[in-house]
Length: 254
Image (cartoon, rainbow, N blue to C red):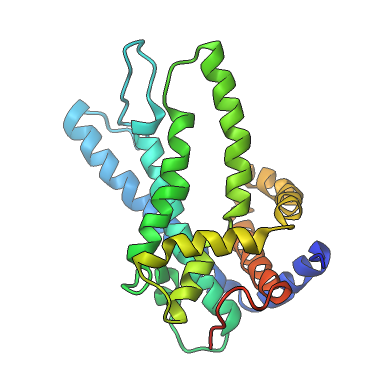
């Protein structure tokens, strides 16, 4: 059984109708607030260090022996990591909204769902593995031919791994809600995610490719206001569709 992407997108657009304010508050507003905070903090630090009055995400620049900037240690890299963490947290709240749109749970509590004591210890460890540890090989080392080839090979492996564990945060959330969470269940969350994506990694990749046009439109900035909630909701809906295809794999959540 396959998941019809066209039907999935149509369902998402219908569910978004009349709820854009809620979805904006869950998915995009936390990122905007984070960006403002980071810019203010970095402006203050940069001013104290260099006297610069320029707002920037790049005031930290760590160079190697060759003088090349190390992206892994740069201010931009950490800004991206924090943004990904906030977006991941919000995606859990978005899954809760998808399942219970009429719940009285506030937008703010859903936007920071991943930071609740129930999820955060495991979520942060999963995040460090998927978003930090797996990225280290791409951001370290020199630029020699063999190292560049090794990076290319790792990039392909990295894509396959990320496709296979794409729903790991949602799986971990469901394990926690089913009373099977905790640090010890992190390995099981990865295992179940891989099993859930078995036979769907290629289709999921195609789904990503089908959204590239929306991502290109985001270069104009304003489309971001709609694209971010839309894309995050699509991935939530895809996870729910996967659960329907393999109903006995993930514990049922009341």
